[in-house]
Length: 372
Image 1 (cartoon, rainbow, N blue to C red):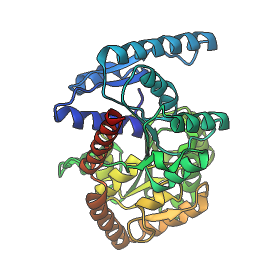
Image 2: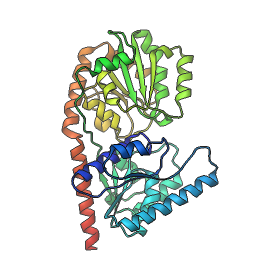
Image 3: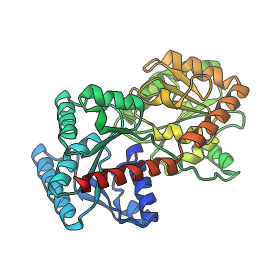
Image 4: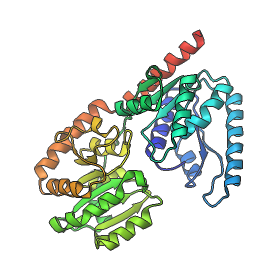
């Protein structure tokens, strides 16, 4: 349990099936951020964490807790007699789907949401073998590039189905942008840049922070808000102080109102080193916010450079700064990109379309397995 894109898609999908009369459970191996009570209060279907995990625990204690979690999950699968299990990360693919196979669950769907930095090669091979051997009846890739990554890792092409993420965006109250900008302590004529994501190395925030001195020199009245939390926050704060741009940064932490910040922002940045199909980018574009993102993973499948957003090379603070400055200086271009992006997201990346694709996949696999 953590605030992230895969978790958000999982819960949205579970809610969609629940609304249509399906019996649904959302299960997590552990609750890293103490979210279980809040999530269970928010959602009408069971949401549970199987075990405990603490960073400070010894390897032996962690292994014991994992073994307990696997036992609890297997017993749950046997008792509840599910017709389908969907796993949403590489690690849950590796841990949950063999148990689902042993429990006799007919449909077992794995997910590939983009390459994980530092993921061991032997685990990639094991993952591909497991999918090919039938522990997974299908693997969902969230973009065409992720499909190619899966094939390169050894997964058979006939096992892979591409289902892009989708978003369901609420109406933002007309006065919300002004309230949010007030919370950010912004002058009326200041620019607000937003990025949203866990503060981990693969999200590339360090490159955005390093772009800020050049941005501030060109556009002095600018603030960068970072929504999200993670292990790199102290390093990012230290880098901002070193570059003397700390007064232009706002570390927001974990926020449940990120969409309000998007509505208040002038520009959204995704500086990632690695991505699959980033939900935050889809949400920002769906709200009509102009975006700049790095050319990684499935991002180029969402953004047509110069038409629905701007693409820059990853790990290149200078290129990022140049793109930010150009858009901040051109309100007309920001409006054009934002409008184009919003139209495209509403046409191609609706949550309803994503859920219908999952439903079709589960039904097809279920009848195929029954016929076998």
